[in-house]
Image (tube, rainbow, N blue to C red; front, top):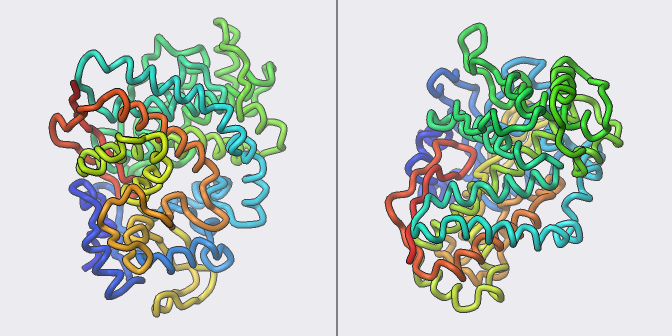
Length: 451
């Protein structure tokens, strides 16, 4: 039976690395049953890919294994309209269309652009640790969650008072399989900008469809408030009352009723000059607001938990963090990959790992398994903060390699550097609580203590 590989509840306990290792040895490409989960119906199943070489082969060959045909999530979009909408996202494009969208956003993530942010990211990490240091204890998930939200707000031109919206949108998307996160709203409406308050009014009242089935949180209807906010922010950036749709008109009206925040100067303003369609613009906003957020809010706490579980390595890293953090961050990403899998769809009949895959079949690559492949990594289940080379695939591979990888590593170094230098006796203060998700390798709570 392989259904447990798909089932989100499996990952509430731990990533099943022993099962992955068994599959790499016996059936590195195998059929996975896609069972019903709560109100979510069963799917047709898919091919799981577990060996490092096969994962790389799939990721580097979009002509055979498409991101566009069915999107990159295991579950198929519920309707043809939903599929058409998500296909406009950069993650769900194949070359040459992918190349156009990557070019548009690449300027925000060049090493030069990230270096310009490094000082402010480091200062923000210091402020976050300052805020909790006197208490002697904290839930590190909450401490770390603000850094990627704050950073992305700067990149996107989102005003500070609205950045909690980014946190809530990510919760809705990454936590839809977890009852603690699925309906969580933390933004204080009274503290939001006029744009934020008007967008909040567009939030779906229920996350179910008229037929009683769950509303896909990644669909346009499931994130109506986020897309309304995106158009309102775009309108503010051009200082015009022209509105591309009704949601934006609501936001434009709100702007005239109260002082608006300063016009955005981030990536949203740049996107407007590129001739994106509405669907492309909305999906690009999703990519920044959610995808760029969820990875770090899981990766940073996961990295700290890994270090706490390996006290000898933590002690060694403390001796010279400035010199060793770069290699350590890569190893922590290998050991705790924030994203465990991504989907492709076969464009033609093909043989992979000795299995005959038919055109139209779903093919899901497991980064978490590839990162522990014993044919690539010596003693792969051992944390080695000096590991070199380190050919992990936590940021993907091929044409979809993550544009934000450098920015993500910068944030991890900043936060871990603060912990290493200012919390010399940090230790667990209770059991960590994992996110129920078969996609994100996440933590909901990581209680820690220091003195």
